[in-house]
Image 1 (cartoon, rainbow, N blue to C red):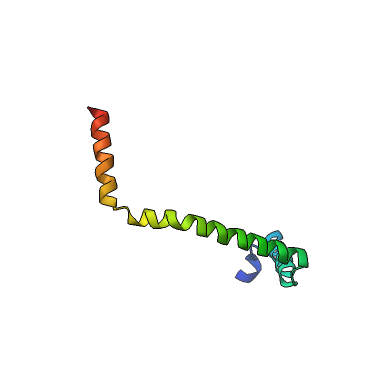
Image 2: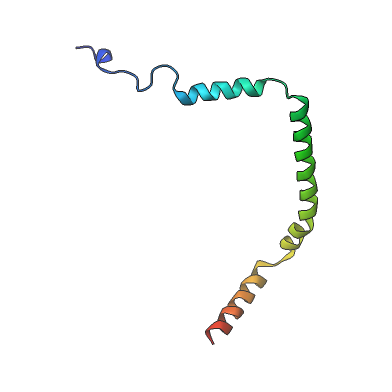
Length: 82
């Protein structure tokens, strides 16, 4: 008996996921509408403002020495156990 007649592919044709993926690709390949562009630019500007707001916090965090944090947490734990 021929083995190819006994074995069939697990998936034949396009499954639901492949169809949805193709639909999404088609949707994304079209140019953005004016409203979509405006919304995207507004979100981008908001993200840039937030990044600038958070920048000082990130710099402060980078200046903190991890050994100092470890020492402080050990001292706190020692006080709790005393």
